[in-house]
Length: 495
Image (cartoon, rainbow, N blue to C red):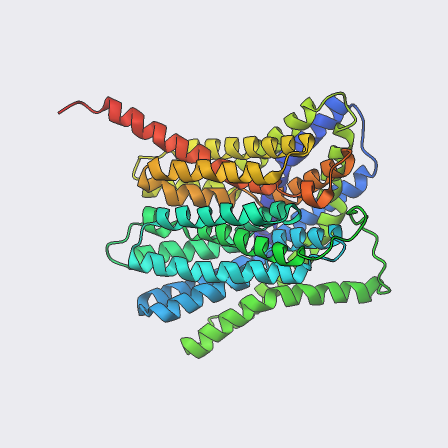
C-alpha cells in the first residue's frame, strides 16, 4: 500500500512537470495556429506514458540507487582513502550516465539522423567514460581544496579550441551530449557525493567546495564527443541528405518478442549501476546490502520506468516538438517560433524540481547572500534566452561554432570577475536546467525546424539547442551575483 501511494505521488509530480509544456502547446494550437494537430489522442497518450515512466523510474531510484549510493558515499568519505574515493567517483559517474534516459534519447536520434555513422552505444560509452573520469577529478579537487574556477577556465578554453577544429556535423551534438549528462539519475548522486565530501572534510565549504562536480560532468563530454566527431568525419562524407527516422521499425521482431528485447536493452542500460553498487558494497566495503528485496524491487521499477519513458517519447514528446516546428514555420515570419522557444524554455525550467531543490540548498548554504527564488528566475530566463538564440541560429543558418565559442568566452570572462561563492553553483545550474521532459521536446523542436527550413541539415543544424540552454543560465546567474555584490558594496558605509 505504501508503494502504491508513493507511486501515485510520483505520478502526480511527473504530470505537474509536464503541465507547463501542455499549457504552452495548447495556447499556441488554439490561439496562434487555431487548429488541432493530427493524432492528438496518440500524443496525449504518449505524454501520459512518459509521466508513468518517469514516476516508476523515480520511485525505483528512491528505493534502490539513491539510498545505496548515498550510503556508499558517506562510508567512503569517512574512510578517507583518496584512491578508493576517486575509483568510486569514476564508477558512480560512468554507471549513472550510461543509464541516463535523456542521453539515450539524444544518442538514438543522432544515430538515426547520421544514418548510423554516429553509433548510439559508442556515443553513450564515450560520454559515460568522460563523466566518470571528471567526477573522479572533481572528488580529488574537493579533497585537496583546489579552487574550481581554474579547472573551469582551463577546461572551457580547451572546449573552445577543440570546437574550432571539430566538424560542424558534431558540434551541436557534442554540446547537447554534455548538457544531458546531468539529469534525473546523475545530479542527485553526483551532488550528494560532492556535498557529502565537503561536509565530511574539515575546512571545506559546502557552497564553494561541495558544488562543481555537476559542472565538470557537463564540460568534459563536450571535448571527447567532438574528438570522436573529428575521427568519424575524417573520411569522405556519404552522399545525400540526413533524414530523420519516421518511427517505423523495420525489425522482424514484433509483439511480446519486441517488448522483451527492448526490456533487455533497459537491463543492459541499468546493469553498470547495479554492478558498481555490488562491487563496492561487497568487495571493497565487505558489507551486505540492507533490505536487498526492496532494492531489487527498486531496480525492477527503474527498468520498467525507463522502458515506458522511451516508448512515451516516441509517441508523445518527439511528435509534439516536430509537429509544432512544422506548423510554426508555415506562418508568415518567424516571430511565433521565437515566442514558442522562449515560453517553452522559461515554463519548463521554472517547474524543474532539481532546480527548485538546488536553489533552496544554495540559499541555505549562502546564509542569506543569495535568494533561491531569484536564482530560479534568472536560470529560467537564461534557458529561455538560450533556446531562443539557438532557434535564431537554425533559422538564419549560421555556424554553431561562433555562437558556442562566443558564449563560452563570455562565461570565461565572467568567471574571472564573478564572486567566488557563485562560480561552482552557476556552473552546476547550467547542468541541471535540462530535465528528462525538456530535453526530448527541445531536441525534437530543433530537428523539426532543421527539417522544415530549406537549406538546413538536420544533423548540422538540428542539434545544439540544449547547449544554448546550458550556457546562458551560467551567464545570467553570474551576472546576478555580480550585480548583487556591486549593490551590497555601494550600500556598505565607508570606513
